[in-house]
Image 1 (cartoon, protein in one colour):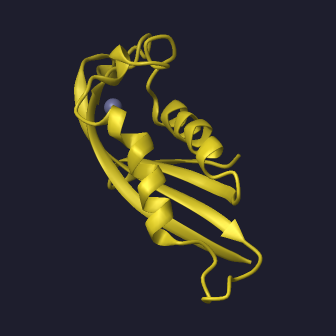
Image 2 (image 1 turned 120 degrees about the horizontal axis):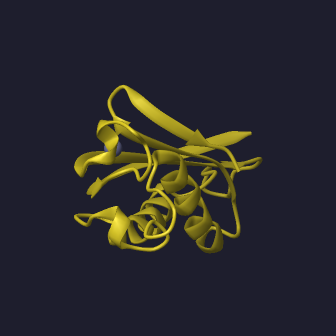
Length: 120
Ligand SMILES: [Zn+2]
């Protein structure tokens, strides 16, 4: 089994409705996102999954999250843009694009110390 990961980031504002603490106020993060896919076998070149392809799809998914207030865009206009919901949303959008490989996990780091891992 091989796991292949790619990391990218986006900068965005958000606030958590109903949180009852300072995260309820508008603030920003550099969200680091790590997507990991897994494959049992290597191709003829000796690669489990191409970093270039992974980077392209992740970048296209994350583009609409960059430099916006997440609460203003779907689905975060109706569900909270918590790192948990961000990870699940990224998974949902990547799943259709990466139909030929299994997604093992999506990590969302909202600070160097704090991350959520979504395992489909
Ligand atoms: Zn936050």
